[in-house]
Length: 210
Picture 1: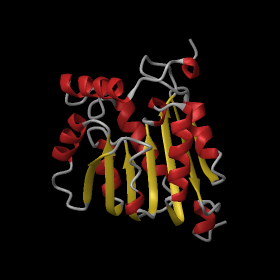
Picture 2: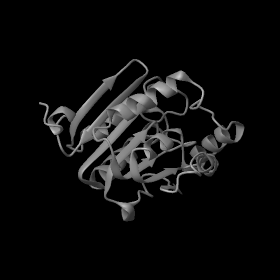
Picture 3: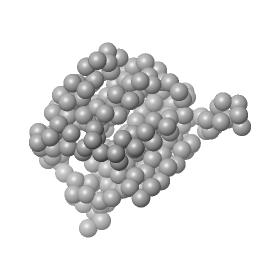
């Protein structure tokens, strides 16, 4: 069955799935131990076009490993997750970071409109749990929430898995359809990383080098 044809689970089914994951392990995806995950986070951080950001939103933060790295590059970070068990682990991981705020959000319904504008939105490994309509809504909300020089980052696993509801290409296609300029494309067999921005200039152009 193609990932796009899979029946989308309801909210309770998704919550049971994530609570089961985080109930059985404090790091079910091996974010702290796998070289693959460490390298992928390094790729995400290297793809950010600005050295530092003011206000950042990271939906789907999981146990908070990427959250910690993003926190080193911003003044305020709002990170959210669907699972309270994941958030409990993320709170422990970020307890030493007073500028990090954690919240439970069911997306796209709970998009933090009152917190915007955001200078950076990082949507990593969560869009493919949504159905196509919800993903289109999330992408539109992300674009509308950006500051004048705002940036959206999407990074997603490419292989199929049982809980996937949407293909990675469809997730990234929703962001591309917002009309923002794509300034980074990093494609590997395992993951796809793209960056879209209101300002279409490259980092070299922004720095006066090109």
